[in-house]
Amino acid sequence: MDFKDYLSLWGQLIKMNISKWMEYRADFLIGIAAMFASNLTSIIFFWVLFQSIVQINGWTFWQLVFLSGLSALTVGVWHAFLVGVSSWRVEREVRKGSFDRVLVQPVNSFVYLLISNMDDDGFGDLIAGLLITYLGAINSGILLTPANIILLSLFVFGSILIFFSLTILISSLCFWVVRSGAIGEIIWSLMRFIDLPLDVYNPAITFILTFILPLGFINFYPAQFFLGKGIVQFAYFTPIVGLISFIVAYNFWKYGLKNYGSTGS
Amino acid sequence: MYKEIALTSFKEEIAYRVEFIVSLLGAIIQLVVFWFLWNAIFKAYGAETLKGFTLPIMLTYVSIAAILTFYNRSMIEYLIEEDVKTGFISVILTKPVSYPIFYLFREIGRISFLFLTRGLPIILFAFLFFNISAPSSPLFFLSMALGFFINYFLIFLTGIWSFWNSGSIWGIRYSRIVISEALSGLIIPIYLFPSWLSNIAYVLPFQAIYSTPLLIYVGKLSGIETFNSIFIQLFWIVCLGALTAFAWKRAEKKTVVQGG
Image (tube, rainbow over all chains, first blue to last red; front, top):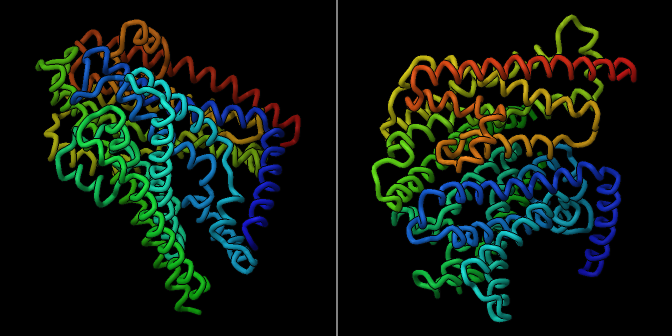
């Protein structure tokens, strides 16, 4: 199959999904509302705290909103479009045996999983992410010039790749242990770290979140760039870190797949 | 082939261990993040006490909250939905067991298991690294148990939504989790809320699940306040218990009429 075939397959699947969502309209709307609300909890959290204080480590309320917005936006895009290779879904496909069926078809199994799974709830995340980022940006005095928007898009592109890669790494474990769904929870735990700006942590944690598990590039370094904090040039590495992460993760996936194919379990 | 069978069960065992470690690690990461957060906040605030909370009290509060969070993460709603979807519900209704009480005991089992296997290590961690204090009153344990029942009635009520709306319970459950977290004092003590928001929180049942035992633990409630709060917990148990009984009657009738 070439790219054009994948696109038309994607189109077909989106059509199917939309008709499914329309059938269960109440669930569709409740799901979106729930995801939207879940993004607001960290904002409410900071808002309550800022009743008593004016800054945390030099970060104002709206700057922290901007920081949260960037990670919410990243997760939102992932949740809406890239959730197909999340550990829960991969585990489900492998357990049901439907993954084996995909393997014998003339499609790339990775692409197939991606495009055959879309999550309507993700749009709640996505809308919330966009809104929070926008509100955080304008209230912290970030000018929405075309140059800034292009740079922001470039950084967010890198952020998405970083987060996506992390999920691929975890999902690949499924090829060895099958029950990898629950291990996927570790991703959400690790993401808790970037609820706060990295500069509140000690140097060891900051180092790990920059160079080893580069979650800092998802929101902290891009936010620093636009807010003029710290070494702003660090943000330029975001897309590069994203690409490198993706190459590593995808190769790990392929390695796991080879292992899976050869044991035939 | 027999080697494969051995390998498969070996993998299953590993997966259980890994799941255990992952969930424990998650709780500990959350506590580490909170440690840095509250340290930064107290530094920013510049005084010893913030609305009556010192840093050590706050760290004790969030550590105990990390354990009470298990209430909030209940999966009962999914199990009830599954019963409705698969038709198992009509089998249960022919048995001499009460459906709400059946799940109550399942939940008691789950929470006991979590407290022992996850709660104790979390407490140990918090004790070693945050130097948290012991509960300031034994009434904490009573209050924690009462909170469990209030929470159970709430999750059972959201769970039997499935009887009327056969679709995914996912969004309903998630909303319940989010609201419980935001308005209960589970993440931030209600004392820190602006007064209009704490007024809202006080008329809702969520604070009776989490805030009351937590405040008793850290010794923020006087003797009379403690008894008042426990009385309010009992009030919620009676109200939500009655509501659950009523809603369950209707759900049961619906199932019998429709034949499951």
